Length: 178
Image 1 (cartoon, helix red, strand yellow):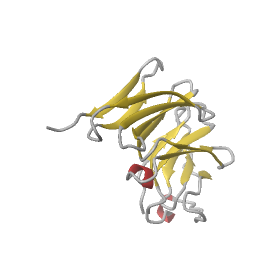
Image 2: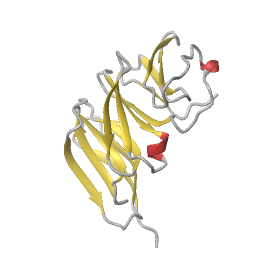
Image 3: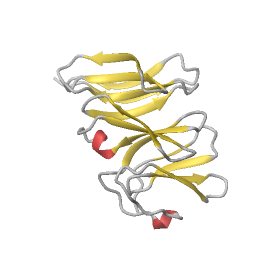
């Protein structure tokens, strides 16, 4: 079986993991019972009831998962975005499993992270021109701020993460070589 990423909810009560079939499986971290399947990036998919029932991963799988601090939303970076073809982040409602936002930053997404208060989402990757970017959006998907990095496509922003107070955003930036 295949899990490309797994992460606990901030309260530690749920485990979110890619289900290898274009969605996100959710387990109760206390009982390890399945709770809810979220998302359907590839259309129809099987509903796995155990870790051993998870199918092999594919291009519709998710590479990064970021649950909001209140547990209401989960942001997910599809494999195609991670590989640099769509630049899309999908945001799902964890109660209904519905896709509530499709956020595009251009051509590639490497990471997404919610602020500690859950009001904003930082998305790191490349814009449509190939420039490194971090876009800050609110829960409605409206852009609040953008950080663009020079380097003619050679700069990479691989990770964006808020500090626990939410007053700083930490970035992993790879400068141009040479």
